[in-house]
Image (tube, rainbow, N blue to C red; front, side, top):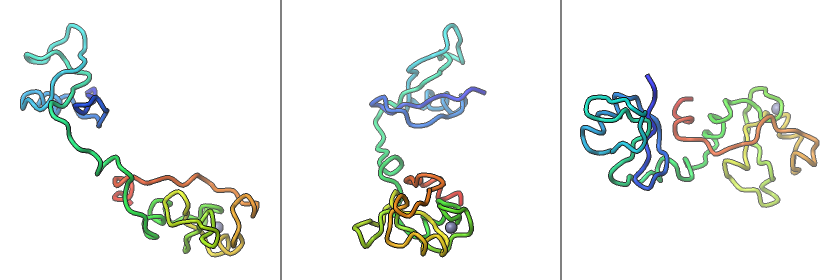
Length: 147
Ligand SMILES: [Zn+2]
């Protein structure tokens, strides 16, 4: 079963749905066929590859700045593993230290073990000669919910 891409009314891509779901959207007239497979019909409709919502849906809650920062959220995002050595993390490290203006943001914080956190101290990873295993990112609601 191929997935059908759903576009918002402003043509911004939203997500993919099953063909069956897409046809239901057409039947309910909440979406129209935007792009179809040539020469193929499903019922009375051209076989959709892309459908477009008839009215705009506000998606800021899904695609905005993401969940609010929290220490628990950082641990969940990083799987409770230290961002430097991969061992069990019990602390939060500020990549740019708070003493130097680093803030509580998703991109400035990683889960860290006590040893790495103390070793790094009030330095940036570069200054401390430490390498992040991955660049911290803003987690999606979905990723946080799965943990
Ligand atoms: Zn560590």
